[in-house]
Length: 343
Image (cartoon, rainbow, N blue to C red; front, side):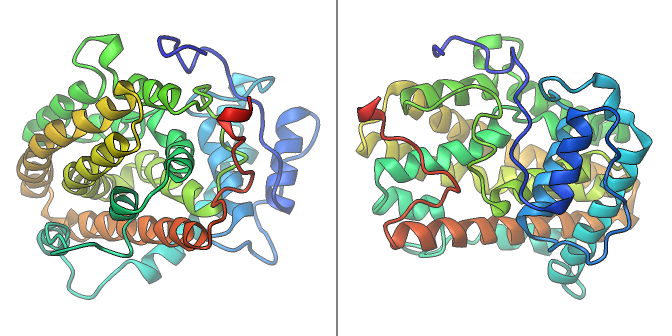
């Protein structure tokens, strides 16, 4: 696939199962006569584990690109929706227990994100890649992030009809930039595909799903969970604000890492674009999207804070998984990438 190809022209195949729930789900999707797994599961799967998050990812993907050989109408299959709801409740229960702080409000949760460490942060993937990272590690990072970045901004678009006034106008303005400001070649998902091409990665949509550990799937599932539920609109705005607040400094480190590694110009451009754009977006999102939402619906303050904290929790879990593997000089992926020099 060339850098100018559209990564979403074809539907991805269904992934390999990772447990009884995902096994039953993929079987039901492959064969219309096969029953969906029961929504009441005993014992319940690990709320942060591979089986639950692969199943959730597959169920959510029915609302995005779908899968090869799966009928579009399965998106609204009532049995699949019942299964999704059960998995979501299990995941949400764990998140609310682990990512909710007493007396936390949106302002304090976002303020905490503005504090950058004075030096190297040993728990940060962008700091590691900037200072010590190797090209093979960056390739793994890009492969995992492709699960979101090849549909960048799509999950957040679901909140637009649930906002109004200042919050809606500001959200649309930021999303307009994410979708290329009217230029297909500047859509951020397209820019990420170009980055992957420069790193000798497969730019086909969904190509690294089988490689991704649960911690990576959970970060993408969080956006879909928040986006598909009107009741979680405040949490989705919190997630969006957290991403935009932390993006610019992290993108600067990643752009510099790619220059040090002598990656191609398209790889560098993706993060260079986010350094400038997201520095502006941070202010717009905080003042106008978050501020506009809470002015109209002040009761959603705790939900916005929850979205910020849940984002930090799952990103922290992913960072720990990546850094633990890389410091042991081993792949963080379930299926290590082939050496591009050998192909």
